[in-house]
Amino acid sequence: MIRRLIVSYVALVGVALAAFTVPVAFTLTSQLRGDTEESVLREATTMALLLGDGDAPAREALARMAGAYADETPGTVEVAAADGRSAMPPLPLTARPHDAAFGDALEHGRTTVDWGSRFVWGHELVITVPAYARGEVTGGAEGDDDGGAAESGDGDGDREGSTGAAAGGTTGGTGEAAGETGEGVGGTVEADDGDDGGQAVGSAGPADRIVGAVRVRYATADLTDRLWRIWGFRAILAVGVLAVAAGLGAIVARLLTKPLRQLNDMASRFGDGDLTARSPVTGPQETRTLARTLNQGAERLDTLVASQRIFVADASHQLRTPLTALRLSLDNVADGVDDEFVREDVEQATAEVVRMSRLVSGLLVLARAEAKVSAPEPLALRELVEERLKVWRPAADERGVTIVLTGDADDRARVLAGAGNLDQVLDNVLSNALEVSPDRGTITVRVETGGPEEAVLEVLDQGPGMSAAEQARAFDRFWRGQGLTGRSGSGLGLAIVKQLVTDDGGTVTLRDAPGGGLCVRIGLRTVGDGARWISPRPGAPRSGG
Image (cartoon, rainbow, N blue to C red; front, side, top):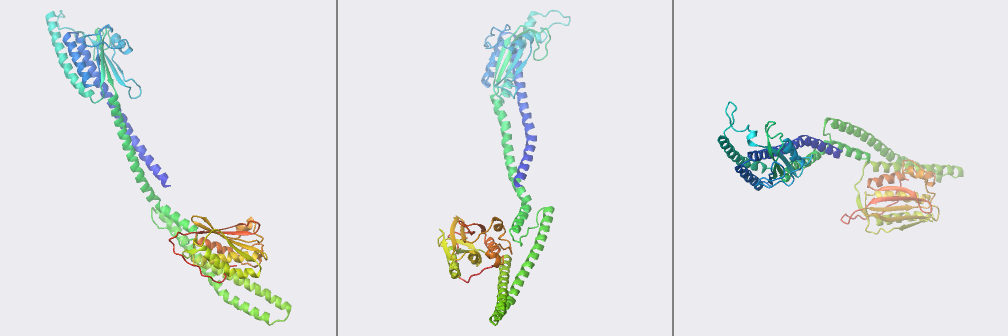
């Protein structure tokens, strides 16, 4: 859930960034393209005006302007005669005077702009501008109001003046163009003359005479660098913002889901049998209400179960005394009766009293095991097993049953178990195995290392075993199988074993033993070398039945 919240938060931030930054980046890119095109077109138009003057001073000014343009930008200037095949000294002839752009400029007077690509731009920007005869574009030489012919001397003077003005204006324009194009990438300028009329930059009438065309080739490498800076800066900024958003989203998501995680922890502990588990009442109103409801339900359930356990424990404890007294009375009756039939009835009653005493003892042990879980302590497994086998071997020898201890676990193997829990587990398992084993049979107790954090204790008998259905129900309380233990047991022995082993963090399973019989496998947690060692103390056999 936390991951989904973080992804959703980052996705929303990403959409917001894209909505704001991408249009701005496109706007800046369009503005960069438009400013560059306007600057180059202005320079090409200025050169076309100088070319249209047609005299030597204008040509020299055009040559100086082209040289300055080539020096200040990575571009060149080329000029050709009106026929499109001859040069106009001192400028060189263009290398490709017959392409379509020159044809449109010389024949139709069209100004063409070619960025070299439909996507952003290509390697260079090419602008071709036609040049018109200066006198014709400006309306010719000066004349009087009656429409008389202009004087040649005045016309020459006017032409020289206009040429000088154009040269001066061109010099200024070059400086401005160089400054403006310096922001982008340098370019190339080419100029050609032409004979055909057409549309020039600015306004020109249909009678204007085209004397050439100017082409500017403007390399776009610097523009591409600026484009990468525009987009790269925003991309890096977006990545940084998304990283910060992911961090903040993780913090916010954990804060939002903390009440849910606390409820989940409480439910997990409750499912494991810890009825004292409670959830803190924190978070939004909805989670607080849910926490209060769960806590109240857990409190009621804990109270009910505790009352039940107390009742079972008290009843079991109180029943032990009258049952003991009843057994003693039956023993006294059996000693004072000579009638064989009466003695048999007394013995049957005594057997039932013994079975009831075992049942009450088992209930008391189980109630105490469920009521309080003792803290596991490190115990020497093999030594504890050997001590319990010493206690049970005399009972086994009476029936000719052999108890064998095997396994690769040494005396250093230590396991975690509550005080007295493992003794009780072994007593119950060995009691069941001894009861179902045939005379002169063998009970195998195997102690092995199941892994780096587990030790395995297995008890194998040669009895009738259990079916798969019986193995599935064997740990239920008061369930008794069809074997020998089913006739005399209380049905609580394996339930007590599972409760004690589970309390210590272990596992217990049943399976068929090789060659017949039943194998009880108990997995126990092991401890490291730094744990405190506790030696087991022997005691009398204890069994829940």
